[in-house]
Length: 424
Image (tube, rainbow, N blue to C red; front, side, top):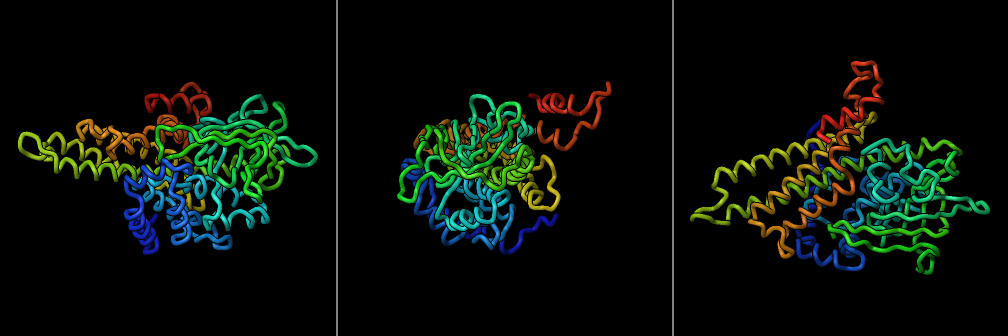
């Protein structure tokens, strides 16, 4: 691994930071999340048109920049620093890689170029609270997370040769504005069910909502990460790629590969947010005086900030390594999940200390620190919890060996031992 960034990678970081410093300050973030879209659409078009942000990791053949997970993670670190409300994660990190991995050539040609250009946005739809499981981050994604053929979840049926979708999902990132939904659904009934990915265009050629599709923006603690509830009532869909015909291994493998990259990008995003919150806190303790001197001169405060600095730097190293591993020929199992766990933990610690070191003022609506605190809390609810991310990474890496002292298999011991090791 070469730990030094290339000139092109440094330029991506510098250019994006300069633009976001001008266009995405705390006041702009607050204004953007109150719009119906939940983000600044003009800024998103600028990021797509001038910087090619949504197509950063897509091949040049489909209008992308032909970069990889490392460049995408660096971009996410900068957007995390600004708490940018934008459909970047749903479009570039979740949906586009799945379309690229599983879609036929006609589907790729129809969807990827407009996604790369920012003309369309997309997101991944999975049942409530199952995003981390679907991406194989908190457990194997071969279970009932998409419905399991039973009531609930999302079901797909073929009617006269066409696919139709039924069901609902909540906590869908930017689901209320996405132009394309990549929906994870089960088909085949309970005994022979299999997981499929299907695409849904949310609006027709005339701009009206697709029949049977109901989208409602949800109230979220973290307004900078807009979420929606999606209801599918006999909605027409197109199968992504060929029908696996009873074998959904390609679908689950694509979701797991996407999860490895997504974990690295989300870890980098959390590191960017933690670094920004720490910088703001350091600046504040240099200015706030108590007993006639800045509180930053007190040794107790310095020790707390030093611990936070070490945590952020460790999380940054883990995120960079996970991005490098995801882009390699042989990805390292569990690297993304471990990096995400460490980054979420670092962000949570920094955000909590930011509130405390601002004398409690940081949790008021008028102060910026509360935005970081809410991002930390909601990201762990959406992608964690941290102890499950670590337990899954331990299982993937075979941390506890093939057999236990009594001869039990790893499948019998890895999960419980891993959870015990992280204090679950």
